[in-house]
Figure (tube, rainbow, N blue to C red):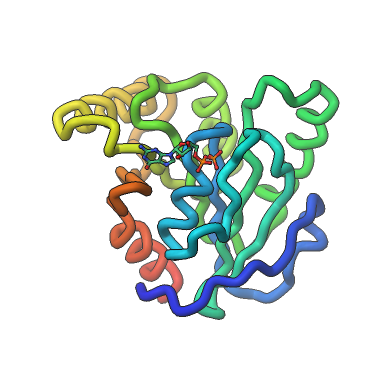
Length: 198
Ligand code: GDP
């Protein structure tokens, strides 16, 4: 897929106020600092479409971007940031939960995890919740440039084994990416293209 246009549409915290055009939508979510903004900018070839976080946990909104006039890319807030208050965490959970449960045009969500880290409870719990609610998702491993090919393979296998041991019969679809090396870009865009054409 060639990115011809990538435009910011709106930010809000209420799923009912999200754009109501019936085009497919793809959400990106993960722990703060996982590399989500960098990945979105790499995918769309825009330097600062998504704001890379000087202060993680700051952007607490559902951000819609329209790509090529025929799909939405949605940048969701990073989770698991310790400095956010308990009350903010609850509000966050509520509107993000509503978003996933109510957003009908959501075609697939991407859960980002840092390829260097062991599976984290917060990510595993979130994946479990997505599974229980039958919300389709794929895993994106980020920052692959930080590891050698053998270590990449080991970390991915370790992650998928954790999932298939504790939660799933089959591992979810996954992508290995690096924003600094543009790794995984073509695969991810082809995956989105395939769904869009269905
Ligand atoms: P976000 O909080 O998830 O949006 O993460 P950012 O995109 O702001 O990235 C967090 C930090 O990780 C920044 O210092 C980025 O430069 C760094 N980073 C993001 N993606 C990559 C990557 O693919 N490779 C490397 N080496 N660093 C990355």
